[in-house]
Image (cartoon, rainbow, N blue to C red; front, side):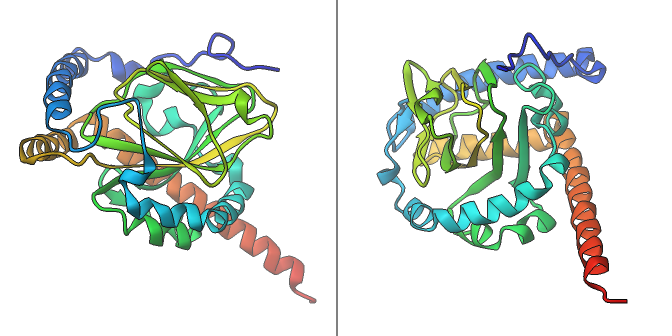
Length: 273
């Protein structure tokens, strides 16, 4: 059965209704709209919905070793029920993520490396650490039949990367629209996009879709880089940064507990006594 946001709506958490938080969010949107226009002017790569992966040579090794990344991903997915939903990490995403339809296994995020999670994916982590100015990285796990409604990202100062890992056989039915362009994912290949363009996602299949998603700084002239650095510094003082950081740490602890319990069970089963 196809799941839509109308069938399983998430309600806005009460803490998101606080007038100060709403005011900060409104001011933040004004600033990001202004900064996006400037960063587009000083960008050293095209200001287009999708970008050519060839612009970023250091991404080639990900495609060359994607099967190793996928193998690590499948091991993580054995603990799928412990992996949090997107809105459990970032409450502000309640409009686009419902129930457990979109899960996120965070490796790098909010200025932090999650050591326990990274230990589960050593090859992936090694590759990510060689990406210049990496900001966030996680596994994005989308349930069968789910539609992520149209939305926009926060800043043009970052480039978003999607590496296909586990893609439904009917891949044309599992796709993303960015601006006026629609593309499906392919296993072992990148989709590089600017998420400040309106975008939405469909998985109209009965299979799960899993990608490695990560952001790094957009190549820009000095003024754009300084503006991006200021924005990323300023947001660390807001609840939009602190809530996800706290929640991701809590989720990491739960995942670690699940692994320990599984290891203990396996040890008990192998004990001849």
